[in-house]
Image 1: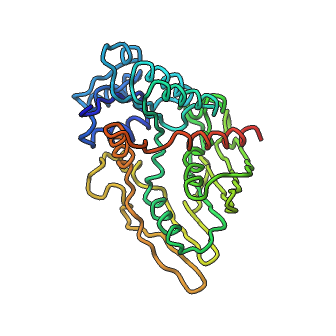
Image 2 (image 1 turned 90 degrees about the horizontal axis):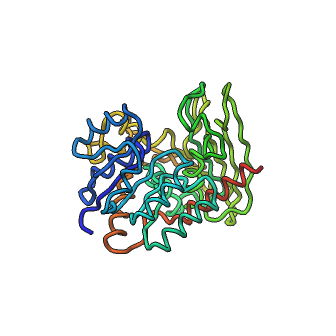
Image 3 (image 1 turned 90 degrees about the vertical axis):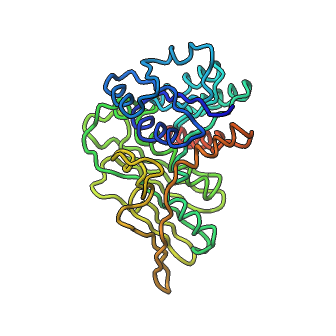
Length: 340
């Protein structure tokens, strides 16, 4: 394999804002096909990627005699597992936008199928490469906070009316709602920092008129290490909490605002452009304790690292950028939260 021939399924937020720009920015990949059933999204895809084939459905994607090296699945959650099985059967390696499936059992079946076929399967847990998360991880690993006791993480915005997108109009059984949308990211970050979980408590609410799935959710996780994680997810927050507030025995880390890469991509910036991944206002994080407050420069976020690591795995046989077992652990916790 030289250049990695790649097809992206879906050209909504996942495909248009994340996957297609990241793939196009890496010379080790070629963006050969985009699948979208929306005429408007197809028009946007042709405009942005004139050399890429635009397909109306996945039948044409899997019908060719030569499989794509890589298929990236950025379609609605309920379609992830079926499309992953189809891609594996066609002979392709697979990236699945989180979650792998809407159940942990379904996710395990996909992983088993990839292993049996000798295909690489990984999950787009891009929030591991948020700049604020990278900064926090550095601070924790340097021991600046002392013994970490509490990890507060929030992802909130203001959208007080139910929209017509699939995340709003489908229930949890089809992977709809804010827990299935943001929970895989926030839980994954907590597991990366503090390890396995022994207890889960959840509060899942429908705040907006006509909501069919949760639009404001709260989870607490008790880690085996003793750290207590508290996760907030909300589409109805008039003003957001700090993105991170982490309390240790010596100091507290705080950062505000969401990583800018998604907003920058929506605004037309692309990976590699000057300032991509950095907050335009130059904001810092802070570490505060009894002896005062220090600023901590926020690292640049870099979602390109996911595809860099994937290219290395595909070319050299190394580990994938995200072990799908990590994402299955997060799904197990989400299912516990939904069961109550």
